[in-house]
Image 1 (cartoon, rainbow, N blue to C red):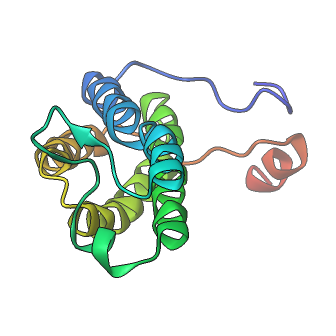
Image 2: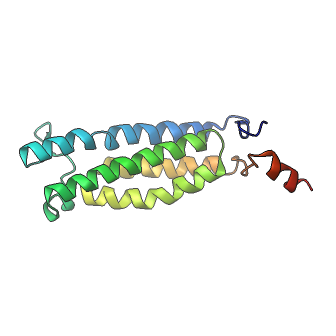
Image 3: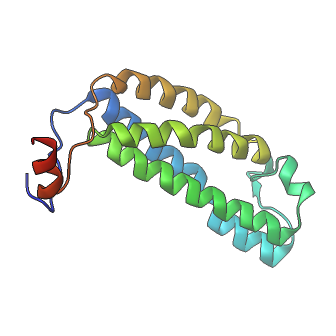
Length: 155
């Protein structure tokens, strides 16, 4: 290990890898559409419809906030899903801190799922929790990332 490279990835944890895949798929499917939905809302003054079935992100928040505030919520959700995807990448590399961050983000994500009336993320969220718990025992403790902290920890 070098001072700049950080700890090695260690042995692969299948549950951690699956957690990362599910989380990144969720972030892509539900976070990324926030951008075109925001653009559509600002241009047309209404939410786009998903196949004439329902308005996208059309939960209780859609009628409670102004269009600009709702766009702010959509973009916040995009940022939140990006953080969840980043933390999932850390979990995939075996980071226990990544798992703690991931677990902390899930309740915040759930607030958005309620506000946007998103049913599918609840199922994905349950799968993510199960995978995170399964991976949790095999994730490593944080390692020192500099030579100075390494010398102190072995003194």
